[in-house]
Length: 374
Image (cartoon, rainbow, N blue to C red; front, top):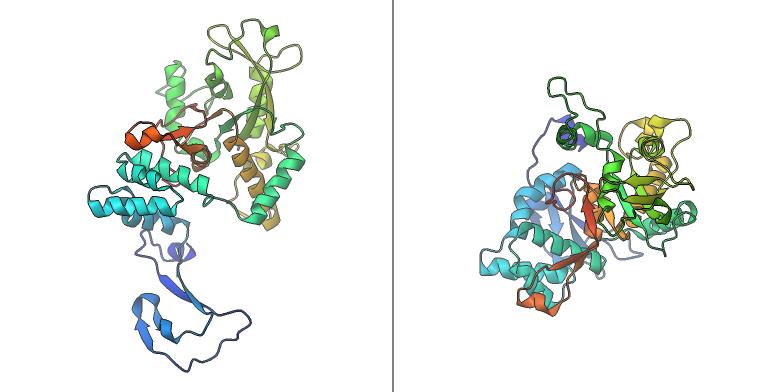
């Protein structure tokens, strides 16, 4: 990525593939005496032939690329292959791909028969999660578990039913979310087209809470309602806490109450992933973003924030009901972790849906979402 910036490169050709030699343990590099050598231009130089390798040595082909390079390479090279179902060879390739992702034989046939792009990606995501291919390094998993035990478990025992909300604001308010925010206030008759003024530059937290108004949670008598335990993950904790404190009425015990349009009372007890920085609203908000300048702290600070963010992700993934939006890659990743392959035998004969999903309710935004990085 530094090379791209230094040379003003906006598009990337096929990345360089490097062939790395892995010597056997306890051996020292030395000059080879046997075997042929060949010139491999793709590998950028002269490499030894396989038959000339020492016993125990292995060669690994490594494609070196940065984050943006992955996307630049994926779109024209891999995406069409992954979605192609036009010819028998592509159907066979799709079935083989599913098997490599951990599918059973009958599931690979189901996967190869899918033609809808979103179903293909969802099915692949569900296989990735089930097989454990999509998992964290052991030390990341260890530190996430420790973070949850120390910072979350007292307020949110994970062995009791709870729901989750993801509120993504930050830089998204200036890009992806802007159109939806404007549309939200315009529908309420509170957007001025001439000046662009609206009550707030975001969609209120109460709109997320309104997604729980499904009839089952409706209690007309406020005293009869029991609080709904909800975990809140957000990059704007100070403002969300202010909305809860100022915009929502409270019951006798101090629980926030959402009074719906049809007269229902829904009580909540909120648990936040991390306490905000005391007295420093900007630091509290920006701490949720890993990238940025040196003001974000050293590597240890960033690592700690990364662990806390992954803890948010896993808690949301295991919630009974997830409320959020899928305009951010984080929300899409939560969704991917909640997908499950439908193991009904009827699916093999064409029955749908091919997946079962942990209940998810979209607060706003696109209804058809792609995988992370789409």
